[in-house]
Amino acid sequence: MEVGWNDPRCLVCKSEAPFSAEHIIPEALGGRLWARFLCAPCNSGLGEVEGGWKSDPAVRFAFNRLSEQIPELARRLEEGQPYIFDSPLGILDGRLRKGEVTLDSQRLRDGSIVVPSKDGPKKVETMLRREGKDNAEIAEALARLDAATEGQYIQLSDRTAIKKDAAIAPRLKLNSPDVKPLLVIKIAYEFLALHVGSGIFHPSLDRVRDSLRLRDLSPDCCLFEELHASSYGPFHGLLISQREPVVVVVRLFGYLVYRVSFPSVGVPVGTPLAGYTLCLDSGEEDLSPVGDSIGINAVEMRPCPPEEDLPNG
Ligand SMILES: [Zn+2]
Image 1 (cartoon, rainbow, N blue to C red):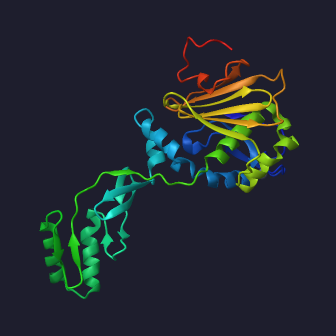
Image 2: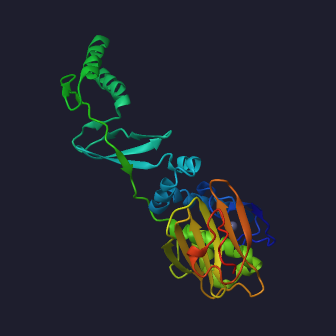
Image 3: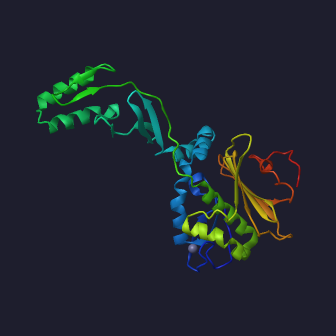
């Protein structure tokens, strides 16, 4: 859903450069709400940080939990993500490639090399060829490799021995840098702009703009709180839960709830507050006015699909 924007200044650097389409909740996370209010350099600069979103441990847990409800999105987000294998050789690295977790080829501290089983024969051939073995010797070594049982060391040449190991269950590798506060603040700031229009350029928000422009969070630019709801759900939501000072609630995958409050900024009484919900399974979006009292508690945000019996405002 596109929302209109009338001010000629970029929301981040205030320059009057041509705008490009900016997704308020990143498109990579399934986001569909967008506006033209960032210049292309600011947009692509923030896009670089957004690349780190899907590796955030909480975000990764969330879409893995929802992989049955949002299979396509979960698969897309998981593709290329790192995994680890707890093996007798130590912790080995792997990655999800084309929907399948595969071991990375890697060299261990003792100099030995670990490769996925499917790459074993090719690797053996390369190593033996480098040692000057001829085709007959290589074929003989590959036949012995093929016949070997798990755990058995076989000497393929004076210099090369190999062992087949059993497959080990991989687990998620969760070691990504924390890009979340900056990106959540970006979402909150852009959603606030939809409410206050040109009021977003108030000097009290300069620190927020500096943080986004430099991609380095200034600790006193706003207050960032991390909460959670009681369960995961296939939806994202945005809400202004308090006018003065303004508090924006960002809710991702139903469960991850963030509150961002911008000191010295308010949404004037008379400006309607809007709530936004995106159903990730159906792609349905809803941006509509909410009463002033509905969003005091983040978990009161409208679940997806909307429940009939929620109190009005
Ligand atoms: Zn800009």
